[in-house]
Length: 115
Image (cartoon, rainbow, N blue to C red; front, side, top):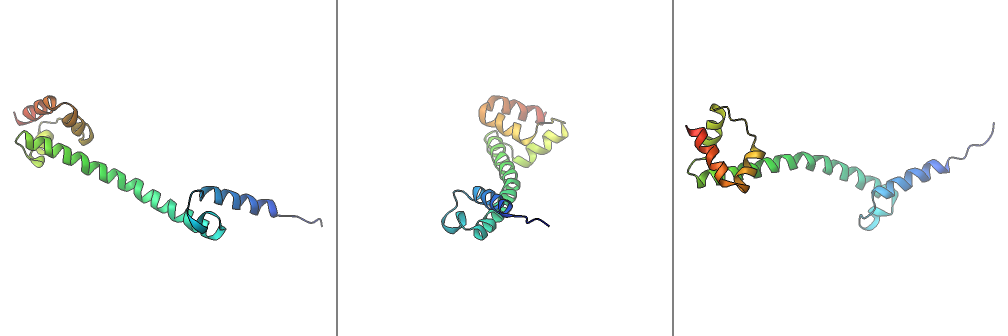
């Protein structure tokens, strides 16, 4: 049986792993075992924070809507309840953008939800 040399697979694995760990500090960018651990942890954090970003943005939108509503004399919960009752189907992202960019339009939306 002929001899099989397997160095290329290991080198490819090591090269790809260190490429993913490029820019990390100290041994995490140069040592294979430390780099592997760092890359795995980085992936976990990336997933968790992608999910968390959605949560944070929704909170920001709620705050913007609440501030604009308070300026018009209505609380956030009353505003959202009125919008739901009147079947005005604007999501929080759009409402916050309207509140930020054109307050007159937002005031009109509030008035139409109260009537």
